[in-house]
Image (cartoon, rainbow over all chains, first blue to last red; front, top):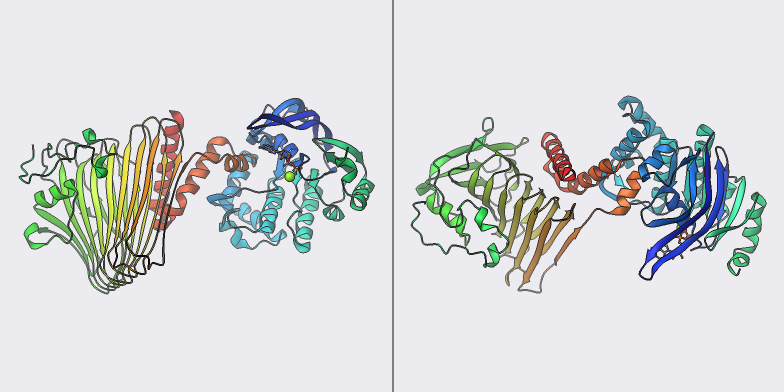
Length: 250
Length: 364
Ligand SMILES: Nc1ncnc2c1ncn2[C@@H]1O[C@H](COP(=O)(O)OP(=O)(O)O)[C@@H](O)[C@H]1O
Ligand SMILES: [Mg+2]
């Protein structure tokens, strides 16, 4: 049983005109097995929240705390946070030229498990993770995210989620840019990861359609750098009908 | 003092071709103040396969195929009494590469080494030249590609730390021939190489690839000249370098000349540098001269940058420690070219060397 606890989180980014506050005090608690949807308009700070928790150097934490099972995450380097059990599926996964997917995955698994996975079982593990997401085996030999389509990048992110088995996963707009089939395949991957590892999920999305596949226990409306309303799945229905206008105008 | 008689204009460092080179560290190769060694260290690894000869021939029996305006190459042509000639007979297809290496050399006196690689019409081969140890070496390799041949030359500068190496690798590429050069420079004190190409016949295609990694105090210069003299030839240049440590200095010059007669030329050159620390300096100068507008394409790009924070973040967000993430990124950066060598053992060795250079840099 794991708990990610975010308390009063304030975050700024540096701009030409000095620091600008993006997150203005975020409170959120995510436990193993729970799915929390964060929904909000573009530019409201959803990715900033995701990146800040993962430790991206661009974001300055100016207040608040983030802990995983009581341990301060903000004090850790990016890799330490991952090894503590955090995973971020990125909105825009990064290309790493010249580094093959298979080399990348093996290096990551070695880091997270503390020892190199046994070659024989590892090959099978990767193969089945890839086929579960309808990825061609030739993907393993391609360079990380290089020349991947938008959908392929997202499948690759969720394949890592299944393979690396974190405690808490943040999925930043994993649904964006996916066609109906890809959305179903990717969502099923998340549902499997939840079932297999009792994963806690923070699902960031702009649209409600992914919530048909991944049922949220809690829905949080995000606007202007903070959570402005919270509820159960019914809140998503309301957003579907009314949009974000009500929150943006505030 | 050498006993050379020709009165060369000794470079002063103000000449375009010499403006980056630390002349004081050249062991006198540029001004003739070296002691001429009698050794000839280039050797064949193993035995010559059928269709291949490797021999030393008196200079009077071989005519120079190319002219030069490089003072060091000029001295070699004058001083070397023997020429080492590797010949691949016409129509020979070699499945395995031919390997050459350098025997023990020395730093007290200078070896002036003149080499010809000649591949006959429609033959296909790969030649690998492995350089290691400490040498004071001036070297001219003429590479003669006869019509329809296909030659890859891999030149590995895995020198020890005191080596001074100035050389030219000059390819004369005839009709419909394909020539690929891969130059790797990861060791030595001063290495200055001139990969140059002279197109002799139409329909020829050349690829000049290279990687270099300079750490504290090392100077590595790679100065290409691709001369499109004839129509319908294609050239590609792609060099990648990394630098780390105080006064690590690399120079890449990409001179491409498309002459008036060279209609239908297709050329592109690229140089990328990865600066891994402060105090290092990468000079990168692409230079395209075009005398005809009737070409297929001509372009160049040059970039010098630091680690991409987004790449490191992505890797680290998967639990990979920062040193391992850096190593992956650097290996990936070089992999595009190293993987072209096509020999797993050498590729692994070079990647390990690159890891070591990176570790050295990290320790500084
Ligand atoms: N480097 C930056 N400089 C200035 N503003 C930034 C920078 N990065 C993000 N922002 C701003 O922060 C806000 C939140 O961005 P983001 O977290 O990406 O929103 P979302 O993911 O909800 O669309 C936006 O208004 C964006 O313009
Ligand atoms: Mg976003």
